[in-house]
Image (cartoon, rainbow, N blue to C red; front, side, top):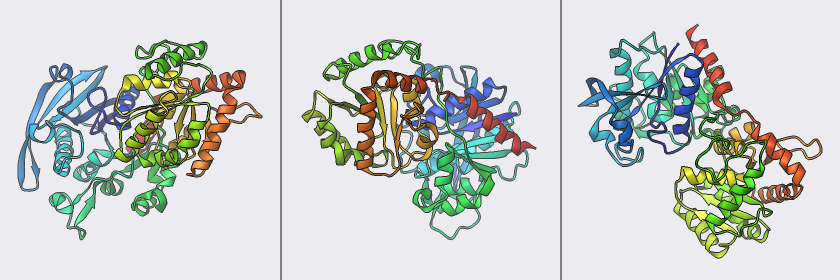
Length: 460
């Protein structure tokens, strides 16, 4: 079975969010199960020179973008036993920032057509399936639809970001459309052979208007061709037993090591150093849909509690300023870090006691999976992948892996935080809760098997 995985970002080359994690970890897991999975992405400016210096050009060709003819090349690199192809055009991809340019439509039309050209010209590897991801590669199914030998899978990582552009940019691909604007995401949903989302609950949620982003009707029309497969995390990268980025290595049999990480983190952040104070963390984009409007409604009440709070991330300037203002007022118990840092994020996972994710919606979420792996107990809203991956704590049965609340409501959230703090004080019960979370198998192994089953269903 041959799979070509198309994505706009792939770590360790370039990453802005969870898609970058998935686009490396899933192909890695598939190859470990015997699938010839290869990855294609644009050759972005920010890709480190240590990788660029090893790339080799394997083909060159022209691509039509409207009436323009654009020169393009494909470069090749093998990394950790995974073959990677890079679409190179200096004008379109040699820029700061992966997204957010005024000609993003042309940039990702070029990328999508280059993917199709690779499949046509590279006789050494002709994929059975092209696995497309989010709007950036959503028009690939239209471009290759006449090729009966290639099937397409389209994965929605976040329906909110659809890639909406003037429909005229696709005049050579689409039959005449009546609307002036077109959603690339919508086209992926309509034209791909199978549509997946990154959790089971999210796949159901987006078929309803509240979270359907105007595409719920098209998603409902896919019927059984729409399915949800929950993301995993790479256990080689996220492993407190071997992680060089944390202060002290530990595992589920030596969770006292978390205390060492906690006090070192407190010291680094300028918080009061006290392992008995519950330390609650958020590593997140600082935006409304991640629950920051709920947080700001109750932050004064939260700061009256005997807890500490650390936030890491960037996002909406409005919420960034609020958390920074409060951290300056409560500097001994609230640390805001408005920046992007994988290394600090890992230190926070390892050093925190609880991990707060009160999202309005969450297609899957990787942070709660990483938190579980590092023994930081999740407190989540029951939506999307959060509902699927965090088993609600049952005090009477002494089961579960975290705490959850149903409604998108700040009062429910703070009640659950207070409940979690009360359990934290019961040391033996808390330790069992932490260990259960650390033992959860959220690796890619199970999800990769489900993707293989999906691929095989297309090839019968």
